[in-house]
Image 1: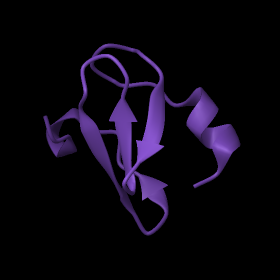
Image 2: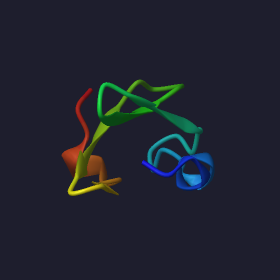
Image 3: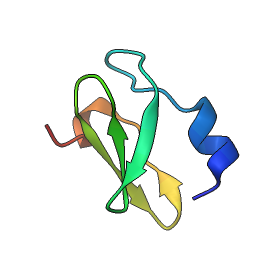
Image 4: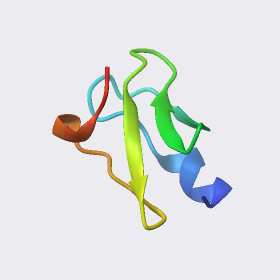
Length: 50
């Protein structure tokens, strides 16, 4: 995953920055985990794991 893209992504729920952990995008505040499919982060609330 491109680090520049990761810097501009934010959790759609709480608007906090995110980081890459275990091949998922993880919110630093609420802890939601968003999947990455074919190299594309899926930042949809319905797709997140709590």
